[in-house]
Amino acid sequence: MASPNPKPQLLVSDPDKSLLPKLHFFYSKGASNPDVVKIIASCPVILKRSLENQIIPSFNFFKDFFQSEEMTMATVKRFSRVLIVNPHICVESNINALQESGVPKSNIAALLSLQPRAFMVRPNHFREILEEVKKMGFDPSKTRFPTAVQAMTGMSKSTWERKIDAYKRWGWSEEDIWLAFTKSPWCMIYSEDKIMATMDFFVNKMGRESSLIANRPFLIGLSLEKRIIPRYSVVQVLLSKGLIDKDISLVVLFESTEKMFLEKFVNGYKEEAPQLLNLYQEKVNLSG
Image (cartoon, rainbow, N blue to C red; front, side):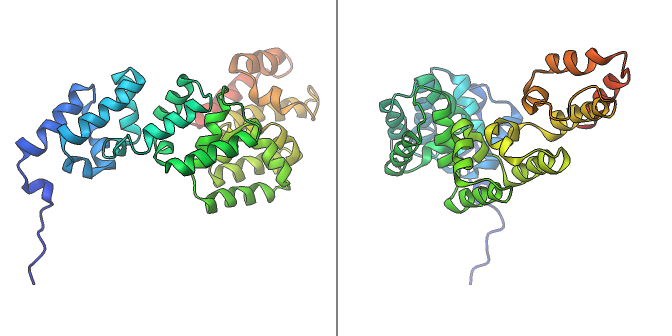
C-alpha cells in the first residue's frame, strides 16, 4: 500500500502558475494580507479553482450587481465560497425572486452583502420561503422582509424549533413568538445562549414580565455587557434613592440613545447621586 503523501496538493503544485495569480487577483481588488489569509482559510478549495473560468467570472457577477468592487470584496471576505459556485444557478435565481416579490434592489444588495449564504438555498425552496414570509404579513418593500428571509434560510428546522422552545421556556405562547418575529425577525437569528441570558436578566434580575419582552423583541438584541448591565447599574442607584419609579419603561431605559440616557438618568441626578457617571463609565469600560 502506498504511503500517504505528507504534502498537500497545493504545496507540491507550481506556485507561480496556481497560487500567485490568485493572490495577485485578490490584492488587486483591495484585499489586505489578513483578508487573503481569511479568504483562503475559510475556503481552501478556492486555490484549486480556475482563476479565469471560476473565480473571476463569479467575482464579476457580484461586482455587476453591486456596482462596487468594494462591496463585492466585503461579501467575499464574509463568505468566500461565493467564488467557488456558479452564481447563475442559485444566487441569480434567488435575486430575481426577491425582485419579482417587490423587494428594492438596495435591500437585496444589503442582504446579499451581509448574508450571502442566504442566497445559496435551492431556488424552489427559496421561493417557498418568500411566500411564507409574505403570508406572515411582511411587506416586501420594508427592510424587515429580507431580514425575515435571512432568518428562515439561515438555520435548520431543528435549530429553528430549539429557539421556539427557548422562548416557550419563558412562558411565550406561539402567538407571542410570531408577534415578536413580525416586529423584529432578528429575535429568531440570535443564538439560544443570547436569548436565554437576556431573558434571564429581564425576568429574574429585573423582575419584569416576559410578555413585555415579546412586545419589544428588539430588547433581546441589545448587548448585556455594553448596554443593559451598565444602564441597569445606574437604575439600581436611582431606585435605592427613590428617585425613579420601579416600573420605568424598558424602552426608555435601554432603547434610548447614549446621549439621551446620560442626560435623563445620569446628568439629571448630579446633585442627588453624583457617583452615577463614574459608576456607569466603570461598567461600560469593564465590558471591553
